[in-house]
Length: 630
Image (tube, rainbow, N blue to C red; front, side, top):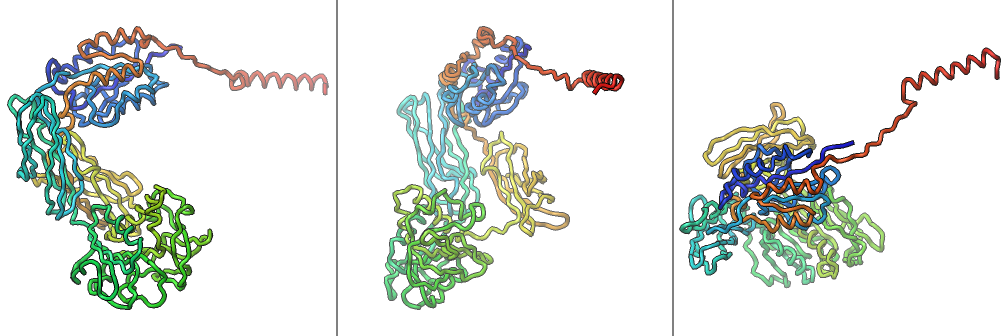
């Protein structure tokens, strides 16, 4: 039978295709291009429309508004690879400017479907200065220096100088000058600021405009830094000289969020470093080994109210010093240290500490540990047991405890430097992740929230719909599916609006907000079930008016030519798009397609066949009966 050919048309709906420049008049020229092609009258073809933005979605040409903030040209190519049995050809109408995703020309090699590219936009260079990129950590910490690097690009302004400023809330924090020597140049500039207050802070890089500049809309870039309340302050006290001490300290220092103070005991009252004040507060105290004498230290007086991580370095028999006893979770009655391996007791999903790289623990270097160990706190959770001589034992190796707002961890085996210095990358990665997870979990406050809510990202654009996701548990720590979560949103003008989150099932909730104007927004979410309030949480996010689509406005004909050539299609500009129909016809892509359809007829399923069989069988029975046949 004959069926109409199917053609997939992908329409670029990003901001850059709406820019008027040179002979191209933005959406007006774009719409004229669509009218010239007249897809609805394209022979016998059946047309399916899709939009090009950050992702691919079904689309209607009447919805073109140049509102997408990102252009991902690899997405339509990937989507096309999944349509190979359904589509005979594809048409991409775009300016070829990529602001997100991979190069699509390489993926086009894998397409058996010819891709016809139509280039819209303008190829002329304009005199322009723009902020093309801002590089900085999105998370910072109070009382620390934070680096911000920006790329300033320009075309057509040699021998000119511009002022580049770093601003927040309209106040100029720092200012530098950039001088352009060439006609086309990219310069880098760096700002270092001190973060003083916690919270989500909005910053902006601004470049002073130059005379006759094409547009000033890309002269600024807005970004945010989530400033956390200081670093994790860690006191690491080593009571023995051992390679493990250096190995553990090196792993802790890798994380910039950690601020470590070290003490190395030489005996008596002697430490290598200066002893901290007794009133100094820490988020975590790490005890490495035990003192050879039963004595106390002033800086450990508050150890009972501070999270602790205890690393053993030798068999410990007898009574520990009272201060160290607070950190003990595992005791042992064996004085002899034996070669052991670890055996994981719980699964990866049972505890966040165990979200570790895959590794065969039977192939790791041996650790040292006494056997016959036991937990001293019944509420402790054992993560790893000891494996000795190839046998999995019930003797705990690593145990954790959470009581109220205090967390404690003890690691019984020692010899971790062997894993940290192993020639195997997997061994080293495992050790770094395990120690880092132990430190992070132990030093963190227990999260006993019933309601957890967060935005999809910390900064949205004015062209996006901000999204909030939440999960809710009841007092029995089970997913709560029958609650109402009310969100009060307060904008930069202090005007508050209230929304109800949509129940997504299994204790998950979502809220798709409308597009918002530029500014900082704060939200308070309250979960209720009946007349009972379960929990309440708050947070914030930013809405920015900047867009990557404005940093580059030069149509990329070479990329669109490569996509067409690699897939067996053809390339056209919007001024010569009348040749598209002829090209499709010459490739027989507008002709009706023949499809062989096999139909099977089963007589036994026919009503008349059933009656005929009954009639014949009845006649046979009657004749045999009448003539007395056997």
